[in-house]
Length: 566
Image (cartoon, rainbow, N blue to C red; front, side, top):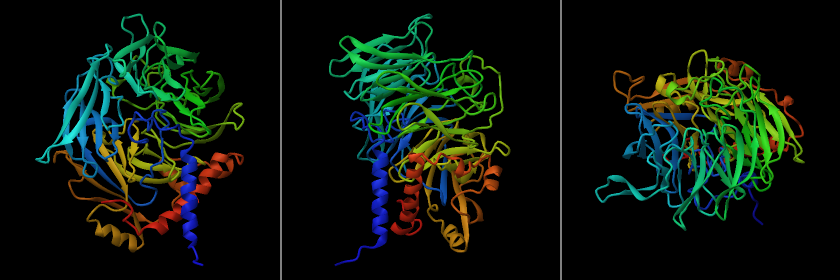
């Protein structure tokens, strides 16, 4: 009888753990592209969680490409090609980009129509369908499906494969339901007093149906879908819609405290959160948003079927960092929200005057769990993590990835956070220039473990290991030094280039995976002692268990620097 190596059982346990975690996500929407990469918030449910493994918390190399454009939407189809919608600074107009996933070279572009209503309208909220076509509604109200192809000459092109007029030009939310209808929400109403419009285009009947929200209600965030329906958060209430005999039907509406005005670090009045479905069984038993109560915001969780409020928990510290403009990470029984209170956006993106007019950005993050019997909520931890990007959870390596900001030095870093404790795990600095600002945009984690992050100037590409040709990196590592970052900056004029086309290498002594509290404090991160985390949290134990196997599997399955394709 052959003896099976112990590592085999470890890897099998890891895979089982990943599969168990994956089951907490809602079922994949068959009308969308690959789960985790086909839409801004990872999937139709907007869970901001993926089963793809990220670049990890060890050696990470970063490539930065400047396009003089803001990249809020970075998507990847089943073939690994990157399709993005970005707004150029030169004309404030959205463009579709087709990018090489390895070099970030622009292979083709397509100019869209500029919206006169909202910076978020005109195609920013879009998704890839099950044929890897980009689906968006432009500022003329045309629902487009844009494909790409390579010519015999080797060049690439973007092509409008189909388009239909839906009659609503200022769409800010777009998602397919589980029957293939394309749902949308407009920023404003069709007149000065009417509310925003929620509707859908049905490709089987070639008809558009719509529902008008109450007067004065606007929509400033994306929308989400699950088998139970489509969730929309207006500036006053959270809704669940389903398709009825005559069009969209309101299943329920729950008003929340919208506060007196938007807070500094928010783009609009009302909730800053895209509604997210989550749950431990089906993956969509619950819905979550934040309210906009002043000065203390709250994390809200509702029963999806009935709209019943399960619980309301104060979000961070009143008047200090209790404000949010990001969608949650929502998976299993847990939700994670970062603070954006005081974050400075471009003035053109903000709507109305904030109250107060300004505030310092100090960051913070909070995890809240639904009690196992569904009767209420409990805060598991609060952390001082300063997140300048919208966090994303990798269920494969059990790390939260985001862009951290050292508020003293202005340096941005790719950071990882332990979801079980809120403690920082690693930090990889990459820059401090204006174009490095991630503007609270969310990243994409590819199936090959590469993380792509949009910035004010372009895109970052982060992957595990050294850059190609980085023999010096290998020697330094073998010589007892771990290099925290190796960065190549491409496409920046010589007059403004930070490090040129050579690698910028920042060595420092090797350290353990987890940052100690002193190191964390210097980088603007605050660790929360593990003993402060609820011992009864099954989620915490699951993360800790799976991470031990994850680290072991890293060491046995491949030699250094060969984990991903170069």
